[in-house]
Image 1 (cartoon, rainbow, N blue to C red):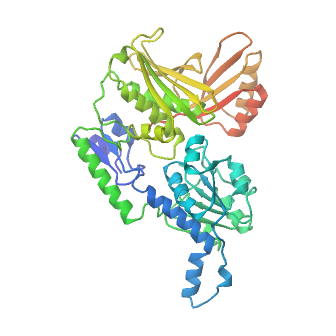
Image 2 (cartoon, one colour):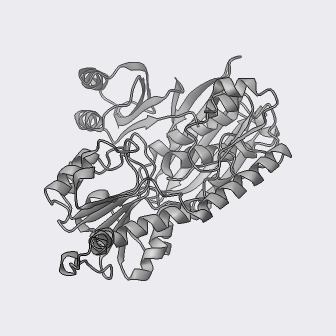
Image 3 (cartoon, helix red, strand yellow):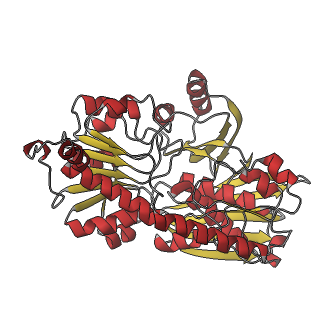
Length: 477
């Protein structure tokens, strides 16, 4: 474990490298505070992971593991292992990031009908992959096979549970080779036990190894011990990748797979704005209700006289860390934007009317709607503040949990949402209301102590007839 104590003891430490993807054993925040670069090999296993998922799908279709065990036991039960063809079946892909896209490309050769659920993939990218984008419920209803390729977050944990299995075909075969817990394991056990769905394949689990899991008792599930990166090629790629990154870091050059900082020189005047811009990017992503078509990163004020290109990277890192299934760095963030067909501009202006320095992210979504968020650093401690959302002026300290609401300005609204959040045991730590004209739209932004349940948000939105109701979690990246 490379924790804060290890980092503090490393007086000559320059870079921490992980020959793989996961960084749970590295204190990235402590490393960043100490100016130490953290690198990993985020793309080393993508092909191996995609191929494993496809292997699971094929095995489920043809009962390969069970047929192998039966034959080795001296039996010859051909009729017992009558499977199904892939051809002309509908395969649903949950998450169309790098691995999901690789799966789509490879499955297209089987003559399947590809559908996918990913709110942040624009139509042009889906068309390029030959995939029809659908909502999750539609995917569950239509798919003969499902494979999951999304990160595990608060929003995606338990994404597929009892309600989703209730919509599925009884012939559904589902695979999770991404992160444990995206499928609710209790709901999966119930669906498999009752033959509500046909079969499942898991490479990842909530608890690893899954020693006491009831899933181990089922005949219609195939399990592997987290083998996504377990190939000779993936291991070699990981080693070579981190070796190159370490050499670049020690030479003081730009590091493509730096997780916490860009490897190039960043002016000390610009550096404090990086974490703020990352968080503004997450807020921006949280405001988006559709895929993003274009992004403008605006830097105004004294800071604009310096090289602020890193601030654009920070904004993109924040945005795509919130919506992408991939590990996002300062260098691969522009590539993710390019892959999604998102046009990105950096706009600088040394004049700023109200603030010494103002950082803004504006965007156009694929439906033509526009969103924006702006922030600044204030005081000697460089406190991070949000000062504008969708052209509504606010002044709110950046926080981990935010709720943004837009509704028609009228008496009693604050009392209504205050009552509903209080009844749900949601503690409001701070609040600000902004409006552009009397009787028009008003925006409320709340800082709360914990993440708010979706059902509570839906109820409040109905009660106040909100046109926008967003719960946004902001992380230290």
